Image (cartoon, rainbow, N blue to C red; front, side):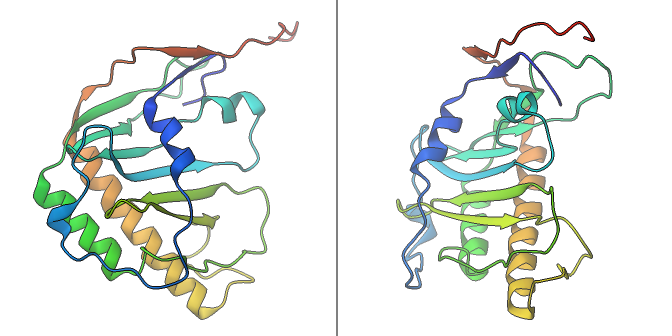
Amino acid sequence: MHPRFLTVTLALIAAVGFAACGSGSDRTVVSTSDLPSGAGDLIFLVDVRGGFTSAEYQLAIVPSVSVFGDGRVIVSGPVTEQYPPHALPNLLTGTLSGEQLRALAARAERDGLLRPRDFGEPAISDSPTTEVTINVDGTPVTQRAYALDFGPGDGGLPGVDAAQRAARAKLSGFVGDLSTAAMNGATAPYVASEVAVNVRPERPED
């Protein structure tokens, strides 16, 4: 969706600020049953932004997937191609089970996503960066991959070596499974309690 003037202000956006990179050492989850469980505890976040888009578009971006400790999910739902678009994004909400949360946490650990990974710098321009924050033990780690969904399915890109391609494939697969689970669990419209307004001068051509 491409709203120009309004964007939902969510606590989950502010939560991006706490997502620092993890330490260089390997991390393991002692027990995925000990995941953060609070309604305000962010466990998974997928945020795609940047690339060749306008400033208005960037201001309107919200994370595509957010999953909290109580199982609540917020996802970006399908949109129409109408113009002008709706002022507010189509956000959906629902719940994932504890079993689903533990399975996703175990998947992140198995794929080595609880420690910093090198995804390379593909030799292409104007693509967005995918940021994936994972907080399964109270110490968030954020993985950042430029142009994650660009190129062939195996992650092959100019300027990216075999190890980086393998890391990109792991991250892409995790994002895909997380997004599918969240979308399947999100069955109701998300109702925002606040909105932020971006105002700019009118242009005659508009």
